[in-house]
Image 1 (cartoon, rainbow, N blue to C red):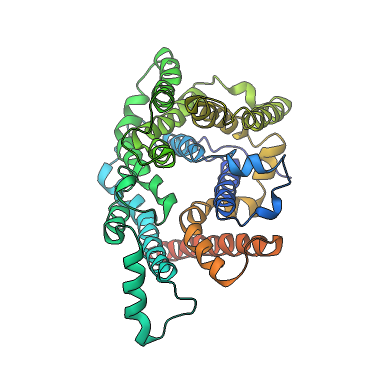
Image 2: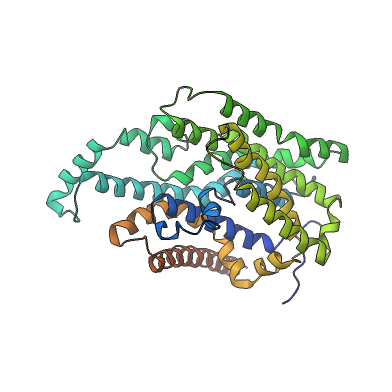
Amino acid sequence: MAEYVATTSPGKANYFPAIDGLRLLASINIVMLHLGSSNALAYMSDCKWLMPIIDAPAFAAGIFYVFAGFLFASKFNDPDRRIATIPFMFSRIAKLYRLHFFMTLLMFVVLVFKFSGYSHLPSLGELGDCASRGLAAMAHPWRSLLLHLSLTWSIVPDLGMKLNEPSWSLTSFFVCYAITPWFSRWLFRQNRRTLWILFGAVFVPGIVWAAVFGLTGNLWFDGYAAKYRFFHMFAPVRIFEYIFGMVIFRLYKEGFFDFLKRDYVSGLAQAVLLAALYGSLFLMGPSNNPGVNYFIHHSFPILVYGMFVLSLLSGKGFMARFFCIGIVRRVGRASFYPYLIHLPFITIAWGICNLNCPKNTVLFMVFVYAVSTLYMEFKTWRRKRKKAVGN
């Protein structure tokens, strides 16, 4: 297999092919998590070595923030470049919000039908009755829809029902994107000592958040589940995970992690980090204080994710080489789309077939990732075509 190396030409953002594969792995883990929570993986319940990876999950949402921070820091690595915040934000909104908007509307319609009690597709004459029944059975349907479309549901999740739940990440991601231009310029003016201080300081908010979670009751929430959802989605804490990714890129550029570029060292680091991540899944338990479980699941993995990203950058090591395979990278580049669309499709699929069988699980995963990859390839083709016509 050809060896992939990062692009390091002056004035050009670095590109690290193995991260595309890591995106795919993280995305699959999240989709499998929600398949499991919908009882679609009950047939796998006896796989005691595998289910913790899915249920925990091993690659949780935090990994998206770490490598997003890393990649955007690499993209904006020139401190003299003028990066306009508003155009940058609009480009991110155009890429992600439109899909969120349509998936939220789709999920809303699907839930109206589900709550209506109809067991068949309503005829034109039954649409009004179906809609009125479904809306009457839902909790604050219109307010929930408004909260999701305005990206405020993750801030006040107890005020509305969840529609397309993974869309909560867009709230914190858009905040992260807003700080990226100016924070990138500030970060690249800092010396090595400050970078190492930041390396440790970014974990403090998450640890404090875990302590607050563990030392308080249900607060103003209806129960533990509602409280956990809020603490899990709280945007300001996610910002520090994103900043951690930006900081490790700066340290990487300073040469502190050059030892990970060696063949055997990078491969060994990948194995050790995966083993640490897997082992941490078994440290959580119902007898622990909730704050301890929160720390193990949210704070500790962020460090592992960051180091794992660094171990992949040279394209060396068994995992990096797998992630650099062409088809893996192509699907991986589109993997944020399955993250945003999979819940409505899971709900629809349950109405069509029994998802709790291996064949249907495989068919569902192939469908979601094939559609997402084809959509990404179409967008890439259209962009290149427009550029060619313009020239």
